[in-house]
Image (cartoon, rainbow, N blue to C red):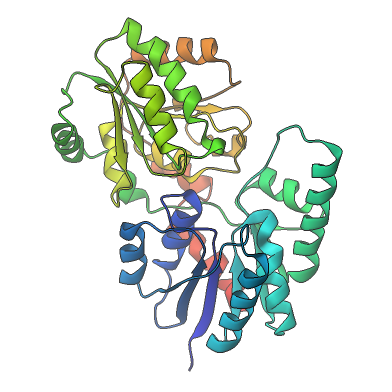
Length: 363
């Protein structure tokens, strides 16, 4: 029996949540049944390339759609045709229409549009009209509509029916590990008694790193043993590093770059922050809770991210409110023990959720 050829289409292969979702699901599927492909556009993380290749992915970089839209479409079309792809799974939200149109023209019968974000920002009439057109193009060219959560699905598909594929994880991988905590803190010369605020995400406008730095500046004034650890890379990293230098916080703000073992870094943190300007249902919010961390997230994030109510707060993006909440958390004792059943009830256990996606691929 020949393998089902599945091509995932992503914007990039950095340290983002979408890449994690693709990796988590595919690494738990039967290698004998599927042949995995990825088309991506932006400069990748070497570590991510290695991780995907380890589980058998064929990775191909194509022209960026923003700079070369015609070439991007042509290369996408030619790749699907040459590799005889059976399933096209698109993860670029509004931009999914490009590979979906190519797949429809080639009469690929299984064309999946996957929404990973909900954008709650205020927009002008032109932006709203453009978004509406792009959403319609995605819907009419897809055979399956998927979403990471209710809000991301409603944003993308409106009242149309869609299937939620939860950002499920290997729970054992992200549980608190005291040895990993000691090792990472030792590597960055952080004392065991220091309080570490952690964040994992690309340096983009969406993730709102300047807000994190401005908040941490005030926290550090009151607690000189506080550290901030930022895991990831991206186009705004240099700008954020300049801001940190201007605030004279270089010693206390750690830029790790992209790491392959993000699960270990949660163990090194004492709390997790995610003040995104917009978001769907963030994988990192689930990962942080599995590690038993207290979490502070922007209140525009899908509330379905809340698994352990006592460990997570969703707040308006007000610096004073965030400073007060962080200080409150710093003064509390936190047990890193979690109830795995809570994650299973919310369908975040990958071993249970993977069958749902396999059924879609096997249509």
